[in-house]
Image (cartoon, rainbow, N blue to C red):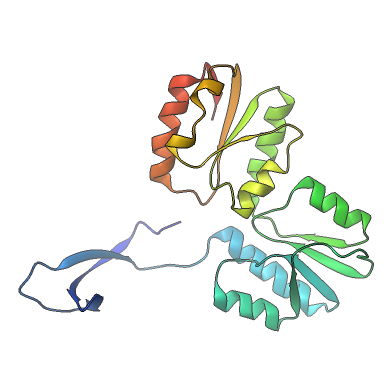
Length: 214
């Protein structure tokens, strides 16, 4: 989340680059810079959990990168945690670290059956979304997710359900005809989703759904 406390600076455009403090006769480009920037609480927690787990030793694995940041990826690799694309056939004596994005129920159950020890570093906010969709599915509501279909967090949310969820990533992807057939819907949002996009999509859903839980 961006810190609302901004510092302001002016830049001039030269040779296709932004030059801090540049002076030009042409109108400058005014850019607002956040005084503070960094990872959200969920990612910080996941990184801390990963490093603490690595200190204990043993074979530790993750299904993908812990965060989309090259420096952190290198840090995690240096700590001895290995990135894998899929679960091995035998997880006995191995640890599977669940990233901040979360994982599907099916993946976690499979890992447990294979013998992996599970360390869950799922972001608490994402965990909350998991609970919401499971509870509302049990109430016979159609689950709708505003988010990127290819994002690991969205895949993890979808993976909490027994029924198929509707994932909406753009206003044009909203299945208007299908909405008319839905009696009750629960709408959740990917925790890192663009706020402006949500504000564009949500009114369309409200207009076309009879009962919506958001």
